[in-house]
Image (cartoon, rainbow, N blue to C red; front, side, top):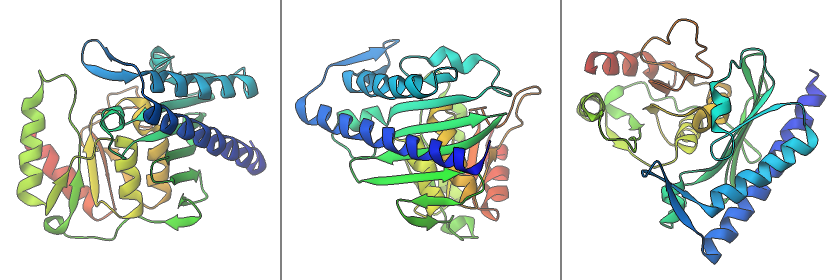
Length: 269
């Protein structure tokens, strides 16, 4: 695909991210319905409306391409994406923040092709910050190019993570948390994985680790890589699976801190 075609898809992606962002701001200001998936995970009418807005736009313009989205098409993530052109959407990353009036929430849209993320957009409508990247063209926050922080010492690093809705497997997570708290300067739990990864990309955070769903990290992954971060996994990716789409044991940091954090988290497991 030509650079011009990717640019066209990038601008399309930015446009629908802004439309969806405006929608969720209106929804929060006007009230919304709330429910829980599997009795645990919060979902709102705003999530569903934003997901439909994005899905309708993608289907209208690219009807032949696969769409994976958290609310309307989550099961599509189980397909083999190594040779598929697909869109990966989280209409509101950070729904709990969104419902409680916190401004750390985002619309996340990625385009993948031939087993690689080619375009990524993460838009926080409450701060009007749009993080974006096209493969090979750097990472950007609005109109400013961004790069990963240059911190080299683990004991001065600010690290972010998150915790699952399901609480039955907390023991290894607590062990990792203790290791990070012991060896790093401090830890943050901000509640929106896509923004956490983008904050590493632009230097507000020095590192990030967590287990995630595909729509949480697809767009932000490319943004972090294009900003100079290493995006990978602190435990081996199972044989036969692509690290691009694998959501367990994700780790993001600059090239100096990455191996230090990798060793720290591996030792804690």
